Image (cartoon, rainbow, N blue to C red; front, side, top):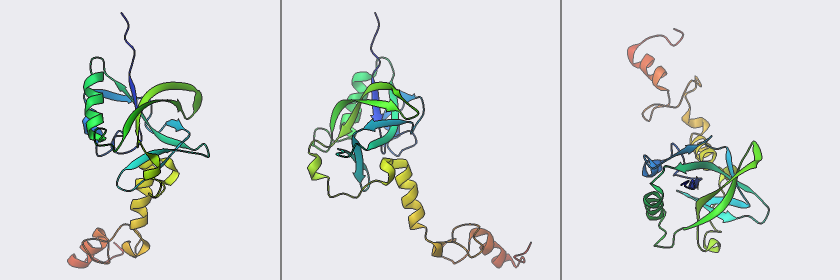
Length: 179
């Protein structure tokens, strides 16, 4: 008897390396490349975590596919439903087709989570490039303005000073900066 493989498309904090990825550990594994999958006709909005909303202008959401390990389908979906607040109405789990970015002909059907009433999330800020990982990196860079960098440009300032850790260490020990 053959069993159907279950896939889950994750696009935010559940992506591999994300702060909630621990919830699928041992029950699923990344399928192919993280960030290489696209959910068509959706876009991302959000603050501390993203929401996939239908896209009227045919945008695509970037994410990862998890392949659910045999025998873990029910348990994993129950855990993810709980993490995503399905019972409380934060998200709903739906089945959709996702494709491999560098080969759009390669598609799989996967579960993913979206808000049950997208109009309630329209006011949230857009997520940069519809990619949560790229968005978080851009937000981190934005928060580290030029004033947060040492004048040597080698790194961020250290412990509330105006110097990076290396320059601060030189100042404290009296080692000349040109060494």
